[in-house]
Amino acid sequence: MGQSIVIHGLIKKRGEIAGQHKVAMKAADALKADLDAIDRALVLCGYQDDPKAIPARGKYKQIFGRNELKLTIINMLREAPADDETIAAQIMAAKGWGEDIYPDVLKRVRDAIQRQQKDGHVVQDFGPDGCLWRLA
Image (cartoon, rainbow, N blue to C red; front, side, top):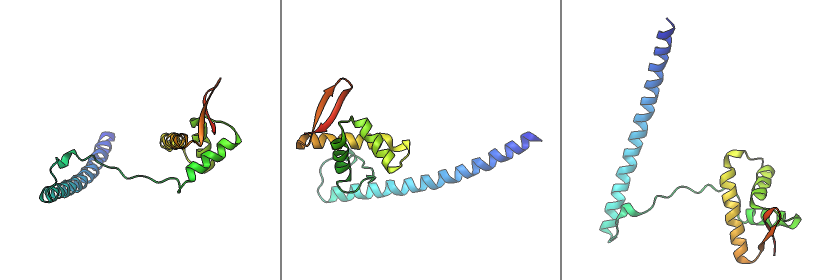
């Protein structure tokens, strides 16, 4: 008796997932057709390279306003020198964000610090605790 309930539940779940898969495949086929049409249009317009060699792009998720990250980093470094991981953790705590986007925030902090270093706003300070960033 118990097995029939489990089997019935699995059959129902498999049907749901198969339906989702069918919809996803239909959407994927539509996207493939769109790509093929764009590839043909590129060739007709004189594009000579292989259109399939054009790299795929993802959407950029904007989580900071214009200059917000740069100004936040500068304000944190005015208080005390800090490493990039500390800066990212402080930003996440101030914004109240969960740990799921920490790698993305850390990457953006590192990129912003590198840009500020090239502009001469911050410098590396190698101390006993490792690499710290401070204002120039």
